[in-house]
Image (tube, rainbow, N blue to C red; front, side, top):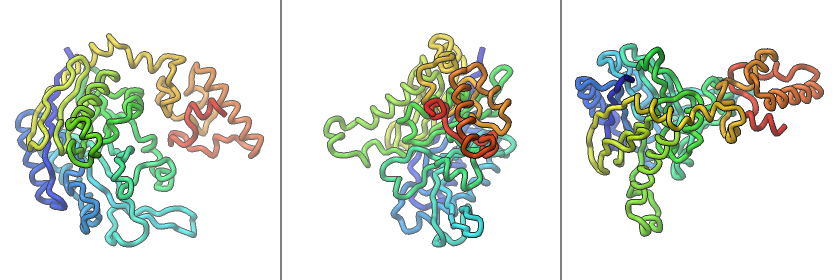
Amino acid sequence: MAPIYKIAIIQFQPKPIDIEANFKYAADEIRKAAAAGADIALLPEFHLTSWVPNHPEFVSASAASGAILSRYQDLARELNINIVPGTIVEAHATTADPASGTTLVTTAPDDTSSGTLELRNMAFFVEAGTGRVLNRYQKTNLWHTERGHLTAPTLESASSAGSTTDWPPHKAFDTPLRWGDRFVRAGMLVCWDLAFPEAFRALVADGVDLVLIPSYWDPYEDVDAESLAVNPECEVDYIRTCLAARASENTVAVAFCNTGGVSQLAQPLLGLRGEIRPGATETKILDMDLDYLRVADNHYKVRADIKREGWHYEHTLRFPAKTAAPLFCADEAQQLALVGGNGRVKGALLEVRDHLRSKSGHAAAADIRCGRGVGPTAAEVART
């Protein structure tokens, strides 16, 4: 039998700009969850500051909130519980360096008025026992009203910051939780990312078992009147529908923790479990039975289809699912080995190489960093 792990979903509405009060509540609930045997504690998005981008102290509070991550690391060590501390908005001051032609990035700058300031909505997975940050994820799909305040990740911004190892953004990672002879693999998304099946498929192609989603989504506010007139519960229905669909179509567990309610755990075959009503301040500890993932995957065989040669939708993935590897490496032989028996992609790669050699006089791959995810997608290569 596969193991059953317990996930504590901690739903609450944070107080605007009151970092200490919000952290205290979250820490108290994490302590209770650890005492009750929870393996993972999941907090909501913007849980330290709330989402008040027009508040005069929002930027400075965001810059200060980054220091709270180390306190969650201390809790993970002390309580031996894995923690996903919702999201923490990081402030990054970016300034151009004329001498080098690059962009300099300062995290949590002392002076938030200097340079160009970027606010990045970040989720973290903090490991039980060690307090190590096993994964960090920047919210990719920003809601409409966030786009004037937050920055979404791009390959260009990752490259300028020297962090292209974090690209593409949708990648799975090993957690400390065991499943037979391997580790449970998790992925993180945030709020409006839920609306995009492509994000989940990218994680599934990377072997994800559990998707953890902090959210700040009020089902009755920031909804246009026309939609509410059609169905006052339209946002609640939207969240439920997406959660059930993403879990079922990808044969993964999806843990969703939302400030505005409808927090729950979705699992294939089982559907939705443990929903917390809108407006409630409540923590629920829900069982994730990995055996249901096995049964569902054996039945639907979605993962096998994604890895199959000639899968119809490989163009939706940045990397071929069968390799989950970067398309370009400095060593040509290694590159061709990565694409294996995919003759179409291999042929396209050779055409691109020859084309660029004819223009530059040397191997194009020499200018592309191996393992950095820099370069065109499989689909882009195939169209070249």
